Length: 272
Ligand code: MG
Image (cartoon, rainbow, N blue to C red; front, side, top):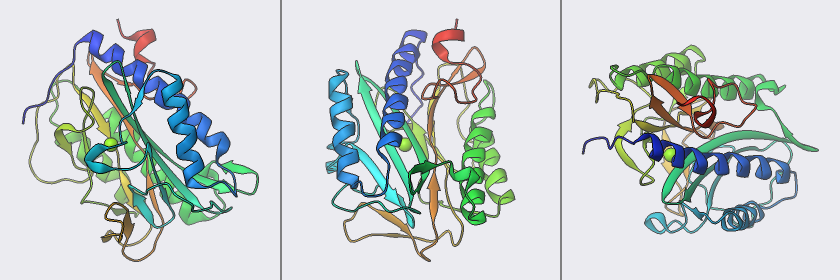
């Protein structure tokens, strides 16, 4: 299936959706404290999204029962919110998708929960968690930087893989990034490793959800009994960072970037 390129107006719409998703991540981060349940996080997400005249992209997708995926410690992705109580020291990945005016954005962060709330996991005292979160987030940034008009998608995969290997992380190969914008999952498939094929040509109008997932241990994964949650086979912790990124005017614009996050600029401000 070919990649569906987006117009300037489409990208502006996905950016508005992405900014809502980014603001929701900030709200969730405030609530992320020891004692909160993953269901309470999901409740906040549903209320925030509905208050902003949007809909959760994950709810009902192939039967997924929640607005958020919340995956803790050895859970990699697709964790279902429920009664589980978050504890200090938990590594929590929150993945969310928003549909606003028909435009879909998709973004994920991994946070470390401290006694009084979120600790930047890149500053974690546990060396392994710092390596995991820094390495995974850096690989996302490297993938974004490799997005260039005229390049093959393989360049993005190679850039991600290089950084993950440099940090000596296990690369989750069964799960991939994807095109996004008109629907939650569009072509192309974005591997987080070199799958061999050169992949489609990147052109202005490409909108990609780039989402490396990595572990401190083995790259083998298991599907939990709930048939949704993926976990590491050896119980090692996993991280997941994701942004929705548009290629326009030969620049990669992070449509889900938080306004103070290091980025090349937001589409709304610079994308003329
Ligand atoms: Mg995604």
